[in-house]
Length: 362
Image (tube, rainbow, N blue to C red):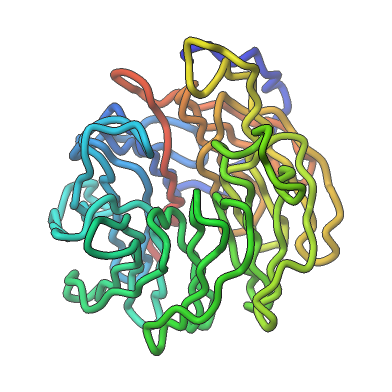
């Protein structure tokens, strides 16, 4: 599981001077740290130690705060040393911890989605003997929980919100559906049939959600259903049904939609390895589609086991964190060429995970 990624040609000269002052924040699960890199030069600016085991990041531009989930005491989903209950709040400019919020009795916080206009942060949490998994609602001004929405699945992992803040989507690894929730009423409204789901994104107009499936632990199993082929399921928001599947060559985990309408998917590629439940990792792949007409625009090689994707606000650059190689690949999306590869410090497996792009203060 600790193979090094193959060499990648970074010879293309790309001008990133307009990104001066912008920062890329990267989680290292086993760091356990959040590292801050200059988006224009890739220079490491600062490293902040946080609680083990950090997973995802979310940046609130209104408060200029960075939220970080800590899901487990050690390990990862289905292979951990107990669930944690904390969220860490970080000042994005001073790069210091503002507060650690304990969500107990909720546990296993992972996915983060922000509705800045309504001052709401949504945090997916895992279920237990007394309740299903769900989403905790936090008021970003007081930094306190104000509600919970059940998703009727044990392991909601990623969560995304429509631009108008009215509809949320939770992907569920083992459950054969994506949970759709009404955020105004705080209730589950639909279950969209997907054979185990991973990352997701919602279109800017709210008409579609894009969901990676099937769950990586389900893909390729002998008893897999016919619809369990790897790809990005396109969900129509009005009918709450899958209307198309964008095929990927390998199982995809992270999904991201840029401001320019590019749909990005991170494919995990591996070969069987009896010594590792994850197999022997091969270089991953960033695959790009047009969200408008679903055209396949191309792909480019990235690190081992891509787990999170984000992009610059102008949609020119993609950032792909790969947890096994503990790297972040910077990709120029217009030409689909590698620009650079950041190495994120780690103490053990796993490494780089959550990402957040922090535009410079106005």
